[in-house]
Image (cartoon, rainbow, N blue to C red; front, side, top):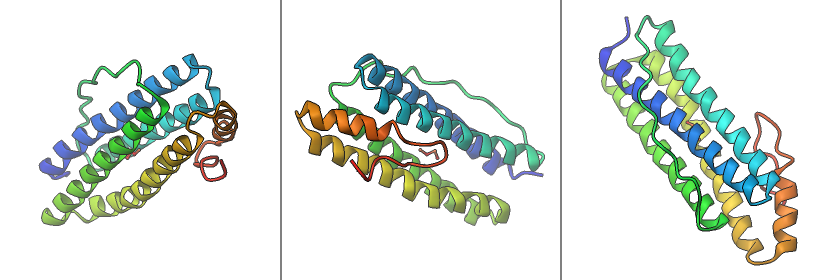
Length: 172
Ligand code: OFO
């Protein structure tokens, strides 16, 4: 039997993870409309990862005999002022998700829910990587500045990201 407070909070986290997925998919569409297929590819993979994050909470709730609720999705922006603004938004979003995961962990400690703590430890580690990779892309976008050649190289590099990894952002 799943603790009702954990069940409610995990259902809300499912909503946040799917919203993350939609945000990155919206950004991927925008990047591809700007003829930046590498950025689009990187963001599509990020969107896929967020869906998997949502599904980890989804499966956990079901495995513990809880009830899954798919809450409403937010409408996402359709454009950003610049690549820098877009990746500032990615980083801010991941920092918000990290705070949310930390709050869930605090709740799991208060409620003495050990299996939830184990799941959340995976997410705590994952968020370190998520913030790091968003920050690395942002730094490289700032480095490229107004140089079309540097931006082209960065787009090529991000286009090499493979599913399950964040390859591409360090080498640009
Ligand atoms: Fe981008 O992070 Fe999910 O949890």
